[in-house]
Length: 170
View 1: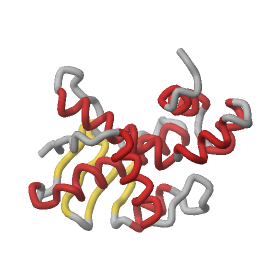
View 2 (view 1 turned 30 degrees about the horizontal axis):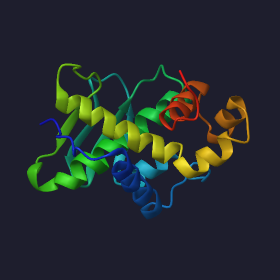
View 3 (view 1 turned 120 degrees about the vertical axis):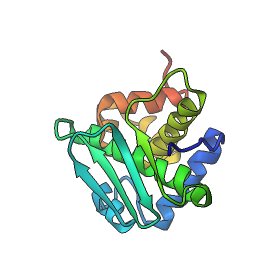
View 4 (view 1 turned 135 degrees about the vertical axis):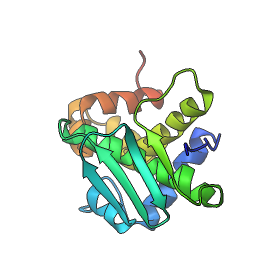
């Protein structure tokens, strides 16, 4: 079964991401990797081709799929998005998904629910990897390459976050 969007605002989703980060003692500078975080959540990261990004079997058993041909930066983003699906769309609706659910890698641009799902996990992933407060403080005092190095992500993800926060214009 495919998940349903929560239809929450960016601020509400970012708050959930911050609470999650506190619960699991995760921050972008921490020594805990996303791999370790997923294990702490009773999940596994599988490196092999799949049409799904996440398969949830039950509350204590889920798999995140990643490509063996992607960059570390891209892997961080996709893992954080899959964690977002798990936290936002599974844990908030466990009662309606007793048999788990799956998240596709490719969304349908004609399906409003899928567009909302993607937007929500995008906001979650950004707040988890590039927390608003810390990002703004660092970004406004450093150049984009230094910011990319500080947050251990590719420049394009730094640009996307900066644009979403209104720090740079198109």
